[in-house]
Length: 115
Image (cartoon, rainbow, N blue to C red; front, side, top):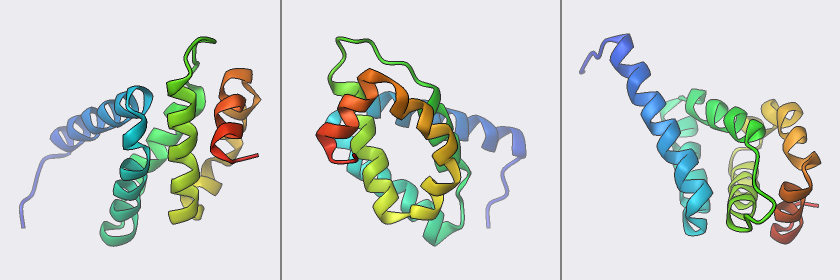
């Protein structure tokens, strides 16, 4: 077993979180694979922290009114993650409500079927 120091693990987690959030924002086709990845981390490796951090960051994300890809992609991600790992999403639902209150994000949720 490889033992990594905690500071290195924190750096890796932050880099992974930034990468996943950026990919979700810019690439619609990665929504479902990213949700599946976080589900695997949660179920097979008992590691929910990354998913929790990503959901928390997404709940605070503000989208431009002319951004149609970002909200749609994030919505598809949240929907897929809620299907695969509802417990993860339920824990963050209070913060995700802020995102759903946003007019831009609400359009994304409606287009993706979460209404």
